[in-house]
Length: 442
Image 1 (cartoon, rainbow, N blue to C red):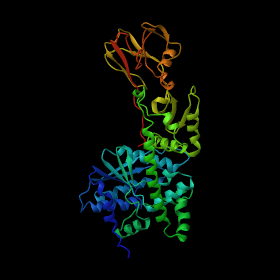
Image 2: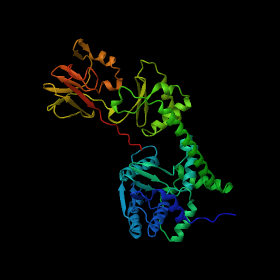
Image 3: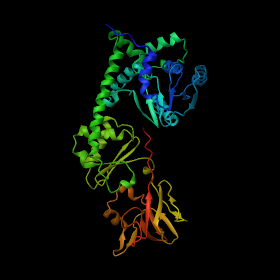
């Protein structure tokens, strides 16, 4: 005997119960069917339940003239429901995929809007999940991609939730008609040049003629893939735990892994561990691009291989692989005068330096390597700086960024390198804080 179907508001309330202590529930409100139903459901529940404060955010992409009227529609709906609305206009970067660029701009706005302990709720439903799985399957995605959209994940300082993933589009339409709701119909949804529209309007109707439960079963497969990805993530964490021993240059603050433990793994486990590690740093490389990892891993000991990815570069040095992005990929040069050594000196694009102990007499400045530098060391005489850096095993990508302290033409110190970073009697040292990279792919 079939169990009676639980009403949609009750199901939504049960699913969101773990998040009722959040600071705010923010609804991503496009004005379309899905987000309109989600907004109405939550506003209705708030009348009888103690929920976090509700607010909505509408992202205006400005991609089509008709969309200029949508913010006013969203304001009208939110005003009627008593829900505050924030409208954010974004600039969609030109590129091969308008869909992808619009999504990146939209989620960038969401990240900027979310604060600590806030939750963003979006209206994707079961049919969307099935379409996502099929779309990614046709693109040759792996287990991570075929797990489709997660029900929840971190986003910025808060969390993203998709509470309608078990609800069909038909059920949302039925609720909207029953409640007399009005919503925006995006004309671009009829444009078959967009892959998702083609799947939704041309492929899925044919599938459901033969397999009426196609959306249900595809969404179930995505859930199975999500479970499998969870196991792969557990394995990756185990493998990465053995590849993160402390190193001599941890003070750089750069993500890095020891190469030897990775090499000991099978190629599939190497890719799995690295994919997990890179997920917070950059877009995942496609299957063909993984040859870059093979080249970096197998290069000779005297080589300086680089694997270039969408968000940065992976370098190899000192038996480790290092992730470089942001200002680490921009060169530094020139001379920075240090007029008041009692205060830290900001280095454009390269953090800051400061003294511990009493600073040496000036005038002082900071320069960078150009080649041919010589340094006088107590008991060792004049030594070539290149040889000294080799002795300290300084990674190649660091050498051009190391602050060099000069008094006139005399090289006094090399920041942060023991034996080279200050006075021979230990009365002062030159300390460098390189500055953090932008790792904003949460």
